[in-house]
Length: 217
Ligand code: C5P
Image (cartoon, rainbow, N blue to C red):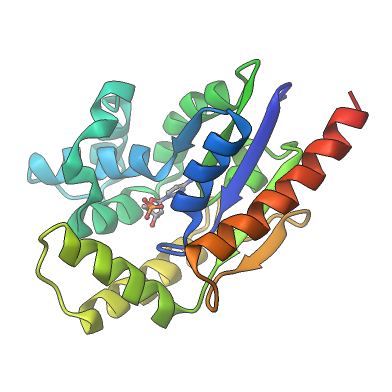
């Protein structure tokens, strides 16, 4: 059960959910957890050890070794970390190991903002504010490509689009916690929006949810 004001921000890769979550945290004075970093950290540990992310035993050992302190590593933002993350995230055992950390974050008395794939459905199903942020694969690929090239990672737009499609298929098709919008999430398609516009719409949705939540307390 969550008792503080929790904002769940779900959606596919490069939909804008991370930026929106961060800015919602600033606007509402709440701590923010990018849950993708937990899966990325587990994926990078497997990669560094030269082991196979598709092996559930290997992936679960890595998930147990993830710590809050390790989440600042810039390596976690790379293209290969995203790929490794979505491979370890398929295993139910990995998801259950990382569940406690996320649930504890959501249960802080002041509440918080969590962004990921299954926040509104599995981690914090009773969150008073839920957003599902999406955009077309082409728009998301362009955003991710700009981010990766700005980080100094040379990659073609075509390859990034192929990554995005592969990740959507893997995240949406897995048996354990497949990526989908919670029934009570508000859908926010940012394909035609600047990040400023998208954040403005998100803020208004959350303000309305907060007013309803306050009046129910
Ligand atoms: O959001 P980000 O791109 O950092 O997530 C990396 C991968 O981690 C996703 O493609 C997904 O497979 C996995 N993930 C997940 N559940 C979450 C967050 C991320 O399965 N809550």
